[in-house]
Length: 398
Ligand code: PLP
Image (cartoon, rainbow, N blue to C red; front, side, top):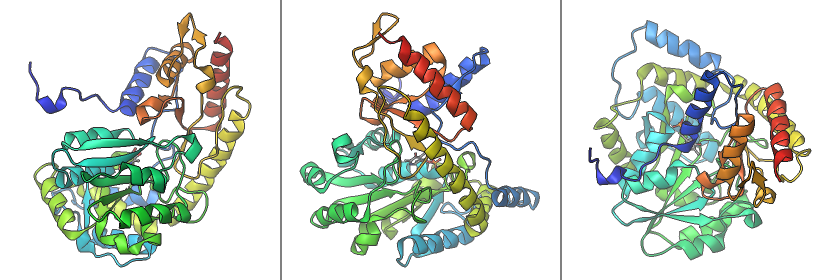
């Protein structure tokens, strides 16, 4: 059967595909350790669960407005005001089915064919594909270890062309866990101020999962004058451990937000009403549980960074936020596993999976080879076992 041109080269999301592979191996009886999932192992916050159940029991299970229930938009506006220190109108908020779809609809409603989108690499796997699905052209800018995996003003300046329509920033980052400082954001803002046609998508989905301060530094902290060019994306998934509830939102320029709401109304209609109610309660009353989650997250970060100190040939910096580490495995390139040469992070992670049933996402999926993305929000015992298996695998390389 012949499918549409636009899906000819469409691949499944590699992280979701790997999660499926891990489940398949586990079903075959293997003791798989998945370090590939983008969600914490702790449960959805109690306040959210209770509100979701109550909403269902009270019959709040019908369509809602496409841009979300007003009280949720109000709470998001207030929360965002607190985070960025600028006035936000609930009218400029749209809620939909997860941050992922919000990003998708933002791209669908902004881009014309051929518009360029600057994406610092390593990047979240879905950005380039989503840009292509919106007929834009992803311009992936390599930000390697020498620049701390972050875009610099020089790299940004070099990447802007007359066709540039958007830049996507994500801090703290998936996959590296690195976060831009205010100073670094100032440098980027300076360049962006000189490029008035370039819009900015700030993917703030991990902005509360930080190890210093309460919220990640934001471009709008240092350049509030860019407000009318910034689309902020956030959601319930990571902050409140609500990945499966599918509630995300965006705050941005009115015209763009309205177009996104229309796009949503013609596609997914709305996020589930009870999930919106649960999110509302998480925003209003979830801070206590978030504090506890952050304490555990920090312990786990320190624990995994400590474990990796003993893994010969791997180097790693301690992340600033989110729940990933990004170890460098380049020293194994050129070595062999079972007679097969390892030439990429994909080769490494495939061999590791085959030999030890440990699932990691290869760096090349995020646009920068030579690394693994490891999600460390699993129990310490499982993490210890995973690192032991990794060492056993490395010892077999010749
Ligand atoms: N942005 C980044 C950087 C992410 O890592 C994710 C999820 O993995 C999302 C956006 C989307 O999150 P969700 O659709 O679950 O809200």
